[in-house]
Length: 230
Image (tube, rainbow, N blue to C red; front, side, top):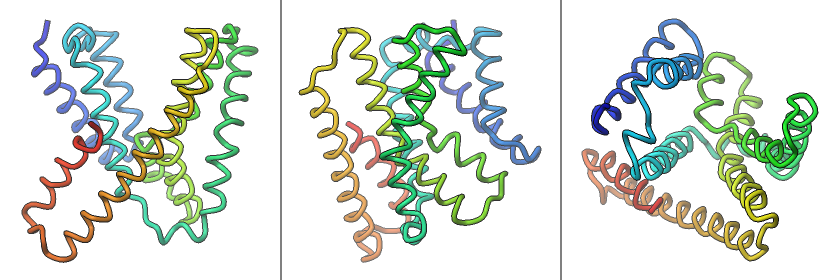
């Protein structure tokens, strides 16, 4: 069995290789990333994360998600909001529950899956995320407004969809969802968003004022992301 450091190195090499190959083949990187994951995992069993990483698996996954969302957020620009703000709010407020209901119904009636599992699957698939949307947008070459709309939707809906999936999973396990837990999750999400926004504002001020040298900006951002996550 491969050691954790070897497994992590293989993941990084395979991921970067897929991104490079996709750029030359003019294909969405997601296609090659999925294919390589299937080959390295279920097909060849070179990567068996649960065995190779053990208790470190979930912290590594969570930290990776934080970095992915941060990198995706760097592609967001507030000057895009005036033309797409209303549509983004509709996608977040109305789109998530509608996609959840339709996804759950399709999974149950078409896939023949029991309602509890179907509702959980429906909650999971409402999350698009930057790893899906951004590679597709690079190749779709949409006009500026729909591209900005999809980009913002992928980033904004990601944490909201994750909270929905957690609540549905709790309901399946315990037969009900604790109302206090719902408010706790929403409060945690709001606090995390406010903390991230404040930290980003302060970091931007520090960069513009020259308080942080050019050679330290990258390392500082790399340190901020896991610090905020923890």
